[in-house]
Image (tube, rainbow, N blue to C red):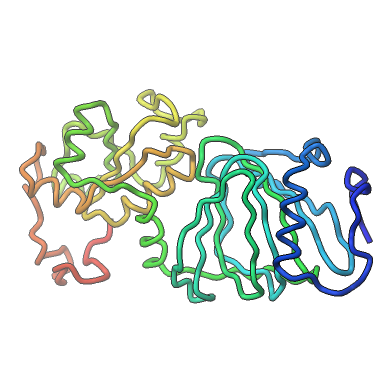
Length: 301
């Protein structure tokens, strides 16, 4: 049995019988409600999600986790163990899936003081999508079951990203830009030359986007004012921009979003463009393949 010295005043089960999710939820709730026991143990590291196992018996294992804004887990289960987590401070968002195929079953927001039980087949993703640090208490039984991560397809990633965004139609985006939003064009140079440019846009190609827009980055551009700034990402057709905007939200830029239909829709709406083509018809692509709304798009950018 291993119990952190700070928690030795708590009565831990001495038997080897596994606990169910209800028992574990009761335990995590009690621990989350008594922060004086463990507050001094928790760290919040912006470079990596901090966690520490503080209890290990034959029946249970207990962990403390510190989350800074934007930190998250990939989709996973707990190897057949039952479990629970309670939010002690801040807020965590949980995406729950129907099994390892990652069919989404729902999204749940867990505020400080809430606790949730996890059945043996529970598959989820947990994230701190707020603006402040979060702390959570986790318990699993039986202990020692290996966490299993589940891969996602690009379609899954796109769907997940868009659930987080309040996406804008071109006219809406133009109004937001007039009111001070930052428009960021992530298309590569060759595509901008072929299609045209947007006079209001700041050009940042995708491979440097996070470094240039993270308010805490030494390589940020001067136009970045802080985490509360509204940023609108635009690509050619509105696919890559959704993934990019979600990545910016992971950095704590909670007002990041993108343009539905991308530059193509912007140009078709008659909004200002410079050079290139007014728009590339949806039935044409540089490869000659059709892109009439089918998946995947002929030109993904």
